[in-house]
Every structure is written in C-alpha cells, then in structure tokens.
Amino acid sequence: MDYIQIAIETTREAVEAISYFLVEEMSGGVEICDPQDVLTQDRSQVLFDLIDDSLISEDMDTVVVKAYFSTEINIEEKVEAIKGHLKHISEFLNVGTGKMTLLDIPEEKWANEWKKYYKPVKLGDHIVIKPKWEAYDAQAQDLVIEMDPGMAFGTGTHETTAMCAELVEKYMQPNQTIVDIGTGSGILGIIAAKMGAERVIGVDIDPVAVKVAKENVEYNHVEDKMEVHAGNLIDVVKQKGNIVVSNIIADVIIMLAEEVNEVMEDDGLWIASGIIEMRKEDVIAAIEKNHFEIVEIQQQREWLAIVSKRSK
Image (cartoon, rainbow, N blue to C red; front, side, top):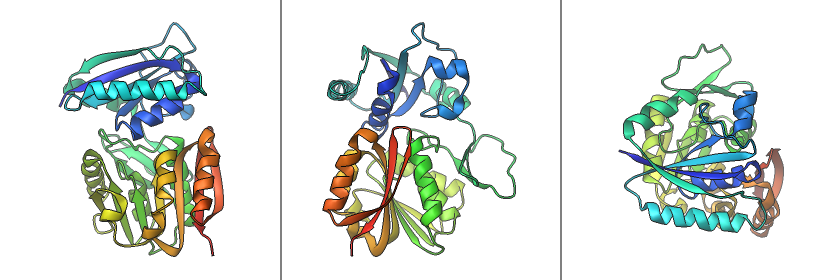
C-alpha cells in the first residue's frame, strides 16, 4: 500500500494541537521535523517518535508536521478537514503559515525508513516499549512491551500515553478488568495485561487500529488476557471494567462522560488522557456534570490526564 504525505508548516506553539488532531481525528501517522530538537539532540523532549535528521529548516522557528495517509482514502476530504482545524485553532494559537504540501510515498520507503527513528523507550521505572525489530538488553526489573504500531499510532513516547501507563500502574490491582477505549496500537491494554490484569478489553472504531492491536497482542503473548473489538464503545463492550482508560482527545472524552459509566464498575476508576491544557476546564465540567469526582490530575507539558470515579 502506498501513502500520501501531507506536510504542514507551523510554529512550535501549535505543534501539539495539530499533531494530536492528525493522529486522533484524521487517523494518520505523524512525523515532526523540529530543527531545535535535531540540533540539541534532546530526544527526551520529542512529541512523537519520528524525526528526520536530514531535514533542518533554515527558519529555526518553523516546525514541519507531516501526516501519512493511505492512498485509498479521500485525500481531498483530509486536506479540507485539516484546513478547517488550522482555521479553528488559529483563533487561540499562532499556527504560522499553515502551508501544506502533498507528496506520494511508495510503500517500500514508508516500511523501511520510518522504523529507523523508533527506538526503545522507558516509561517510569519498569515499563520498556521496544519496537519488535530492535534489540534490547532487558534488566531483571524491566517489563518489556514489544510493539509494531504500523499506521495505528500509539508507541509510548507521547506524554498522554506515558501518563496513562503510569496511572494504570499506580491504580490497577491484580485480577482486575481493564477497558481500553480507543486502543490504537493496543499499547495501554498490553501494559495492563502484562502488569497482572485478569482481563483487558480493547475497542477502537478504526479497523486498521484493531488489526494492528490484535497483532501486537500476539507479539506480547497476552491473547489469553486481552481481546480487541471494532466498533463503538457501548455496542461492543458488554463487561464492566474496574478501570476504564481512554487516551483520546478532549471532545471525545466529553462525549464519553455521558456513557462511560455503562462499562465501569460502581467503584471503578476512569483514566482519561489526551487532554490539551486549553480544554482542561471543559473536560472537568463534563466529568463533574455526569456525576464523577476528580481523584487526580497529572500534567506533562501541555497535556493532562485525569483520574475520576463515580460520585457517591
């Protein structure tokens, strides 16, 4: 399968809002070319997993966000949706030129090139996310998760995923059931399964993500614990979870607040992430309006994760 690259010139200020929209709303793979990251070599601060070291902009304040889509989709609709999002966020962020360019990417180049920039990464003290094609010298305390995200992004380096993983590790008890909404590559569900969950139910509306997640479940030998379903939450998830995780975006979390209790035990916890700081109050208002109380809020840079439970 060949791909189309849409490159967007923007500012560092708008990178997170644009990138997360491309991944979660547009279901695209994302590459960020930030000349500051390349020059400083500070990979711990990279927003996503892919940096093209050969592309350093002459303008050190210009960041290029690249999205990758299958040629089978309607690219004109994607372009119009991206234009609409840029116009929307330009009301409160400096998006720069917003110039877009399109480029055809042959399958062979995509399959071989992007993997060079995806390396093992450690979350917290114990969790190691390792590309399945990379060697890694595991230590005794390491919990190694092998991933091949393909076009379903969820590789573990974005702040939202890292916070979710740490919160699952903090709150999960042995033999609990975890519901992973918007499972993507399956990374959070796999982490929960390897940490001792009795059952993990992953769900995603994107059939590509479901296929990738199932493959990653097999790579990590947790088929006996984790199942992955395609479809909307209530339609496909029948069992209630002790912990519900949704690493999505603010608008979807706001909608989920009205129905997430349908798949959560009465004393369960809801870990919601993917919330950009500017939407914090909107999300909290929706959570509290639907009879949840806030247990904890974590923040990394401009991203938040909120833990809540049903009010008594």
